[in-house]
Image 1: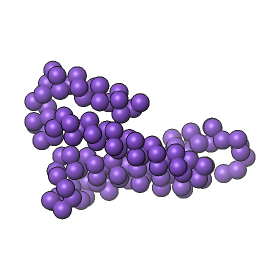
Image 2: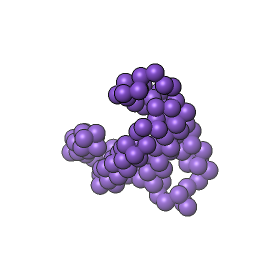
Image 3: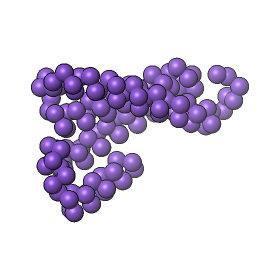
Image 4: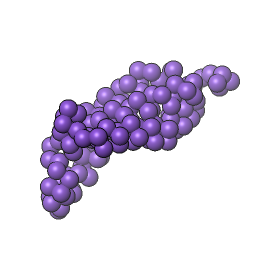
Length: 122
């Protein structure tokens, strides 16, 4: 669902401002593919370990791992395969993953706890 909404937005941007993709060096198809691949795989992984995310440390670890995978996907779309990356891409990817992982880890933990039948454990 999220990938479809983002893809719809990218389609609107592509139709009215196609130069945006040229400026960033990304094609429309690669951005849409990134959304579907990253969000589908990230969502599947979170769903797979959902019950373990009731532990705060695992929720943060899971969200950081998914954020790093999304960052790698963004890097591939913008800079090509990781073997072609320069040092700045290798620095940005883990920082992106850590920042967004910490940010979304708390949300993941709260979401799991609010949907859990076990209210008293931490």
